Length: 302
Image (cartoon, rainbow, N blue to C red; front, side):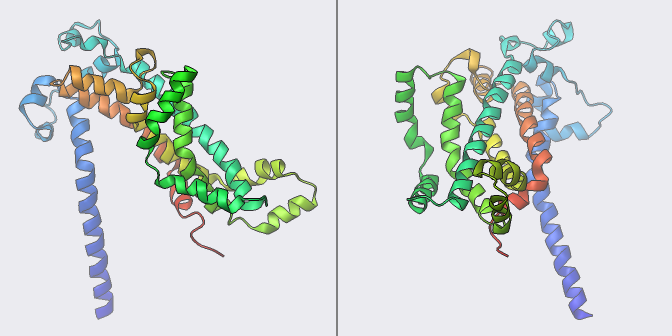
């Protein structure tokens, strides 16, 4: 009986701590969401939590989102809230640019790393171990070291300020982690599957496309989450390789411009920031069932 009580007390303590941590972790997000629906005067004069004092009397609307997306600016009520050129924010095209950058910059390294991981795991060739160690060693190299040399090469090749240039940059920076993560998973797949396929006359390419890719979905999805979120939230690489070209500005660059130009318009910044959170959340919740399996790839043998 004493052991049962101790076990119940331990569970209550653990779950209580987890609930407290969850509340602390999500409170800033809740505050950001609440502020994004409030008018400027309320955001400047009262805390976001006051919105819950009387929900029936709370002054909430979608005007902040309409302003930052440039939708419905011909509405007089919305125009009254637009000042200091805020009608030129136009986050919508920045969202499209971010998608244009993030989707290829996620798919390209996944494809290359999957081929490389299969080669390191199941194909015998001279220098395989040394090459794999060199790839993994790149994980400890800060990307900031490579920014200036790569930018100089980009300027010679006229790749600065282009989507192709930032695709290649994100691919190069993301490949070491991708190769390491996918290798840990692919190398644990049963050897019997490949031996049977070779006996039936299958080539390495057939084995890769018909067996490796379908069996590696958890690891592929896990890396896709990491890479997409990293590229979507990236500002440094975008500033360096896209420079100040307004036609290819991504969402993080546009938000930075809002911060500099509209430093007091926190109601617009909160709306813009919450818009930037939507796509990473969609990707995470869509692939989260593979997330843990992908993180544990190769950690347990047998």
